[in-house]
Length: 338
Picture 1 (cartoon, rainbow, N blue to C red):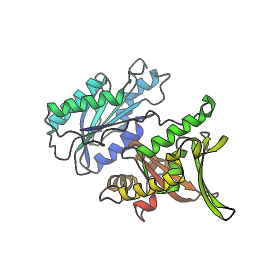
Picture 2 (tube, rainbow, N blue to C red):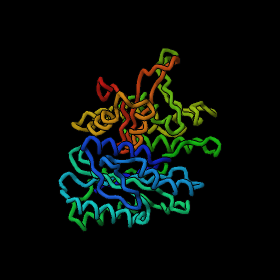
Picture 3 (tube, rainbow, N blue to C red):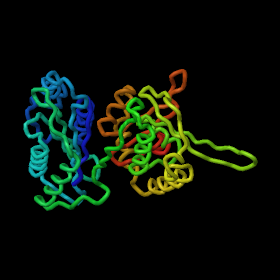
Picture 4 (cartoon, rainbow, N blue to C red):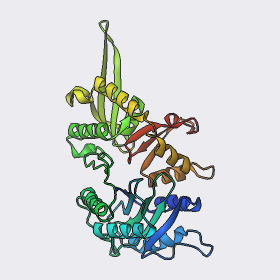
């Protein structure tokens, strides 16, 4: 069993995403706690009732930015659990993670080859205090291993565990030691994501306030190729003096990146490697959704959609960054419809 934990400022995106799945009969509400009846008089899921249940916690909160605790529990496709077993699994997981007294709602999804759970809760209690979250990924892994033993489930395959990337934080120029911050981000991105082109890698790094530039040319009839990294502000502007990749190491230089792109291309050519991302994006696409609603639906699945927009406001491209599977893919890679 694999657990993927996400944090967001508001639960509305996660709730809206799960409601769409319920409306399509691709999911069902399995369990809820400290939440008003999550259905209206017609038996349809009522997001307003869920938000009303969460609201007192939001109003009490004063300091926590990412108030949402959204976890995906993914048993192996070979594991066949009853509804009651899934409920008990969700309850025990939440109790041991410290969320046993929190309001939460559990959804069972059957839209892919395996049944899996989405649990939406809050990281702040009724007094507005943030719940302890130290070593969250480690504790979660220990709990899922215990659940595997308890219910005789197949163990998680190595590499499927949740990514624990404490070094993947946005570069903050004001805090200093910029070269160290940038090197941590670049190396962590190379370890945890697959980018098959320079453009995709650049889009990924910009998410963490890092710029990257390829510099190629000829000097004295000799060709040269290099990489320059720099810091960016949250608004996307460069700040400080960029520096050559050689100041970090060969593993982040031009030749190393070319090999990295080729490895990523090979990995993404494997059958099914892009299926989950492609299906999730397809599910979020609707002629009735605005661009912001589309991005919010994907955000609930821990996927960023980065649009490229020309000076007159027209979209000419999009890159999807799947933080669950570590995939960065331009829309054209997923198919013509994207």
